[in-house]
Length: 347
Image (spheres, rainbow, N blue to C red):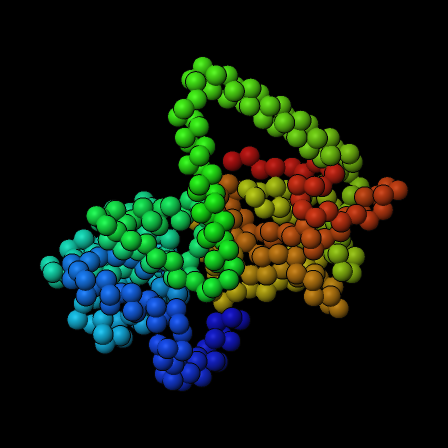
């Protein structure tokens, strides 16, 4: 639906883009100005511009490549995570080709500027850079440190381009505070007496272990407040019968219904193009079987791990439970809060 809406608006969007100038966006103006300044100062400069999304990196790459004042200095390419190309991802060969060109540098026929998502923050063999930009890209304090860690060349510098007083600016200030706290904590650890520190760690481990055990006991007590026999699963909106709770099964992180009659009580819509993941494929959507109710129960999933089957990954928030007791109808905010036992598939 989102893609169809985009295609309908794509022509108008392209017309508006053609009218846009750099000065219409102060952040882009700053980016171009800083890049020009860096490359004027050192023609051998090499760096990364981090963008928050795949779409952002594609737009930034196109924008930078169109700037006449940068053409004589900059050869830019894009690096994102692995996945389907039609979804904006790259395959392994494409990633390696981009990285190889980046290692070469401009003077050897390669590139000297990479526009990347957070895939370039860690784990990939990327040469030392002498500048980093994070364009509207703020994650957590670890991500901030990792991004700066790519600027390992002598006298390297890092920039963050965000709107003043924006949420991203506030988040970055929080990250800076957390980073300072981490440094203080690490300094205290280095200076602490080893024997005393070991004893403190043991005591803390005991506290955490006891808290975990108590939480597990509490969870077990909650899960066994009611017997599963006699509990009926209903649509939250219209109370349409879905299945008996005895047919519920935890499969991985999903909860499904194994009742052979389940698909006679619901309506399904199949996707023209499945959403493919490693262990599952989302192939459709399940709704309440009551013709006057359109409550969605969750995605129709093809499970490829464990027992292979097609089932609905039920949303607990879409259901209500007839407890067959004085409690009457109860809604649980999530499956983990259910007060009756649910079977679990063992892989």
